[in-house]
Image 1 (cartoon, rainbow, N blue to C red):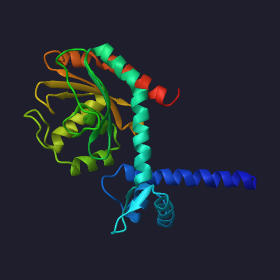
Image 2 (image 1 turned 30 degrees about the vertical axis):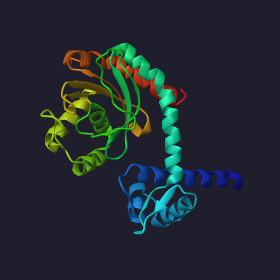
Image 3 (image 1 turned 120 degrees about the horizontal axis):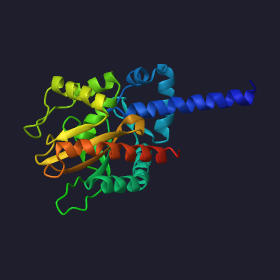
Image 4 (image 1 turned 135 degrees about the horizontal axis):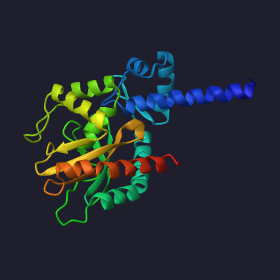
Length: 254
């Protein structure tokens, strides 16, 4: 190996380590200490401390008075730009989902505690479901949340279930960890999740995972229960899965 090749190898390693730190901070609610970041990334504490200091100088992370770290303004600005770009990229897929199902389509992402709606295409029906872009919703009572939870590594899913309040949004909401674990096992087996009036009475939603953002994104369609029957929710899964796969392929440039 030449000195130039060795230098490139070290440069790539530094980039990988830096991105691992940013991903650890982005995937955890609140802030993390150096030791916690080291544990989450598997990197030496000294390396983490050095890279965090460099990231802080550029505004990619911020340090609070307790010497704990969170994402900084540079990362947030990049995130806003990426969300706008993703919304544009997702628009054709969302329209395709609406055409295939006749119901409102949404793209949502997991932010460490809740799901955030990133983009939407409305149903052509006068009576339709609307979810404001940017709105944050619980993971346990939504189809997008349950399908993402089902795809997370078991230890991460367990941490989420142990920390988020399982509040009853409607009489149909699953409010115990045991019931939710059973539901997630069913979701893993069938490859999609259904919100059966668990978030809002009179609304049924079906969601499938999108292979982006480490599997922490979901595509869904929602409609009033009169139209989105349980049979219809199962029927739309094939079309919704195809649209989600097309979206992921375009986002990756494949």
